[in-house]
Image 1: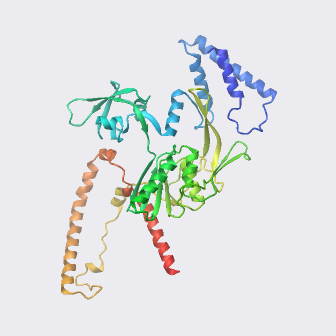
Image 2: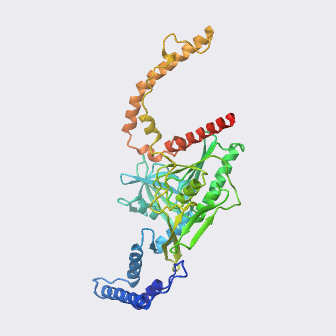
Image 3: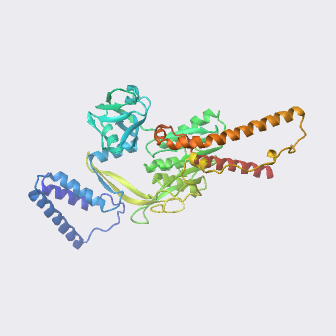
Length: 472
């Protein structure tokens, strides 16, 4: 591509108004056009200088791509020029599918550990195990690489072979695996029943079929309960970065009867795009509901939380959300590249803006582990009536009942002493651990402090409703 052709392409791109949503915008005045051409001439001079004076040859394509990236970076953090690699990655992320090996990995102290191989994937079938360490990819050491760089190296074209060098604890030498990439489908939803009656649903990203996956999970849990009603639903959107707007609407529609889900306000405040609740399909409109959010819940997560909060359909718990309320569109420029451009901002059904504000939870709950919470509890040192020697019982006991009670009390006191003696040694053991076990521990919602607070809220709500019915 010649310098003048590249300049013409850039001029066409700048002048086309490709992404403008307001068709009533007036065309630039003659003086503005002249100024634009003068600036483009300045660009042409700089590019000519680089091409002729830079001490090494550089391609025009590289210069143009760098100029486009720089131009988009002057707008906002979410607008960007998407080169071939980034454009392909974005398409894969929103589809929830990519060419890979099926490994969940993490990094600690510069070492890449395998958390778990995903069932029925190349890594799982090859026999790679949890706690294995990746030390080579395609016979090259990965020392010094970030976690993201390692993940990108393992992803790639479906059908291509990739070599992994694995160190396994207790093995005499490296284990070598030659694997072929396959289509890996990321499951956006993790669900399980808590206490056999509370439906817990964690949505990690709003990608294609997210709402469908939530629906399937709810139906599956209902079957386990033999179609008995849920005592409550907990929708976990913590650390969910967002994703597809359509899926935010679809997820909200599962729990709302009708109305607006979200409004997008473009450059012209009069030009609004309104997304409504879908009235058909699976719905749960009555089950008490809690939505968990935190500072990393963004975009589509905030849309869902905001909509359910505005309609009073759910109690929002956790901490203030991220505050990413801007709308991006992705336009494909040619076969391999595209542009992500901010074109509007979101507003909740009650016209609350999210951008740089976030969603304020109805109930603020700090993120701490259940173990830390329990360690922070004070020892129960109160002396109760039943601890007093010769205390009266609530009923007149028979001799047999008295013997059973006294035996139970002796066992209880013995257990208290045993617990107190072992508590310190247990704490010491836990403190000696360097956190390695936590890397490979599967997530248990029933042990999550915030999830447990959501459960307790739903339990309290049930008690309150029963009390009101009894009063009436």
